[in-house]
Amino acid sequence: MLVFFDETFRDSQVHKGVSLGALCGIAIPERELGRVAAEVYHLKHKHFGPEFARDHEIKGKEMLKNYVFKMAARGQASKNLQFSEDLLRYMARKQLKVFGCVCFIKEFRNFLCEDMTSLDFTFRYLFERIDNFIKISHPDNMAKLVFDDRDFQTNRKNSEAITNFFVRSNLGSSMDSIIKTPFFAISQAQNVGLQLADFVTTVIGLKFAASPHIGPYYSLLKPSIYSYYEADGRRISGLKVIQDKEKAPGDLAIRGRDKKAQLPAHGQYAPPNGGMQPGKSIP
Image (cartoon, rainbow, N blue to C red):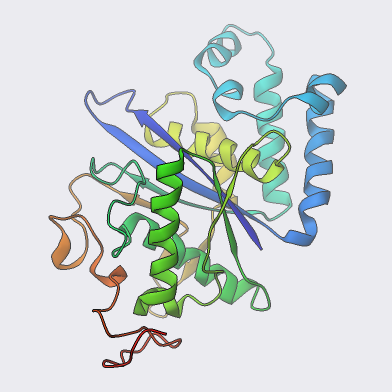
C-alpha cells in the first residue's frame, strides 16, 4: 500500500494571527496505481482536453484559488470546480482513504522534526491511524510512506526521526504494518499519488483556514477520510486536528516532543512486540 503525503501552510481567512500546517496523505494500493493514473488522466481529458491531461499536473492551489470561486459566484461555469467535484467523487467511489494532521501549534505546524530521538507527536498521530487502517483493512499488506520532496535538510531530519521511531522506540516498533524507511519523491509531474495528495491537502487546508467557499468540496471529501471505532464505541477520525490550546502529550509538552515516541535509553532496544526489555544491547 502506497501512502502519498503533501503539506500546506496557511493563515486563517477569518481569525487574524491564526496559522496552521496540514500534512495529509492518500492511500493507493500499489497494484492499482497504474489504473488510478489512467482514470485520473481521463478525468483531466474530459474537463481540460488532451494537452492539459498529458502535460499538466493537478495542483490544488490552482484548481481551488479564490479567483475561480469569484468567477463561479458571478455565474461563470468553471472547469476547475467541475473537475474538482468529479475528482472527489472518483476518490470516494474508488474507496481511496485519506489521512491527515492539521496543527495550529506554532512549534509543530511546520512538520519539521528537530529532535532525531523523539518524533513529533503530529507524525505519531498520523502513523497510528495508518497502522490501524492497514491492520484492519489490508492485513496482508505493508504501508510505504512517500513524502513530497521538501529541502534536503528537512528530508534528512524527518527521515532520520521517522526511521528511529519505527526501529528503536517501543511504540514505533509495534506499528509493524508500516515499512520503517520513508521515501521522498523528487517530482509530482508524473506521480498521480502525489498530485492527489496535493489536492486533498489543499481541500483540508482551506477547510481549517475557514475558506468561505470550500464547504461543498470538503463535504465531498469526507467519505474518503478514514475512520474507525475503538472498543468503547468511540469513533476515531483519520484526520487529527491539534488546536493551539492543546498541549503536547506527556511530560515533554514544553519541549514539544512526544513521550511515547522517544527512543529507549542508551543500551536498551525496542523489541518487535513493543514491550520493554531493558539491558539488551542495540544490534
